[in-house]
Length: 314
Image 1 (cartoon, rainbow, N blue to C red):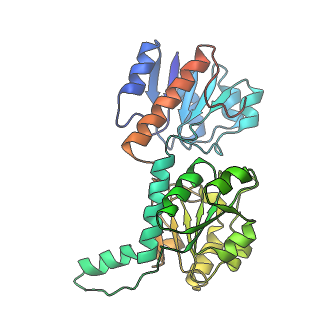
Image 2 (tube, rainbow, N blue to C red):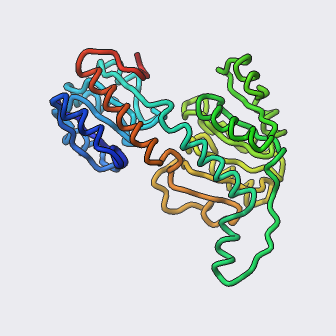
Image 3 (spheres, rainbow, N blue to C red):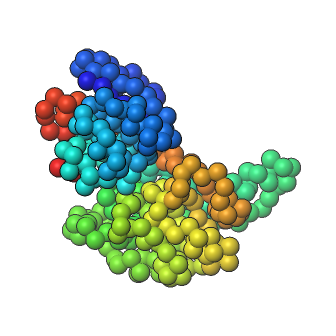
């Protein structure tokens, strides 16, 4: 059994995933994260399984790889995988929905606090020999709007309770009773945009969520509001976000996910009210080890004729 892997962070901190593969009599071959479709097809020609990061898994890929039985997303979002094509070709797709929820929730709050206190600018000015007196924004007691109150959104809400924040959320698939038991108020998205002091996104990317935060929704937000996106890039219309930030119609944004990645240049990079990072919210040692191990366990389950724990296209 051969497994190919395009995730550069796979098993970065632990040999356990490799041990599981070897014990099952399988092999794994690492491929470049930015591998082209043609090269992926050539390198994976005899592969039974693939563990992927962001390389597109298209109809053409599935049609060209008849031995492929399972694709495991080394993460949560499967927008780079054509699920319908996978199903047509009899390929199971899995993901790991909760392995990095605490890492992402921690990082979300790190971004929120950094935005509120303008820490990157304070750091740069202090290093430059200045002694800046920068007045930040309060977090304690403010209103946090969470778009998507799944496992990560709930973890963020728990952290917000420590700051005694009012937490409101939008999620059409949420269980109202369960959310209210957490002390979170469910509202529609427009209300969330109008009332929140900080807005954080925790939904997957789909046709329904593409540019969910667009010019119209940005216009609803308070000029003092701040937006955090540690989910998927396409959820936010980046051109509209740039205009809102540049014109000071929005106070700030922290972005860990972009529509195109890697992104070496962007107008957003020139703004001093923006914090950017390279899609690293889930990158902690524990999270990555759990992520890689879970991927391998589901891949091996499928290859051994068993049901995976985290099916996406079952």
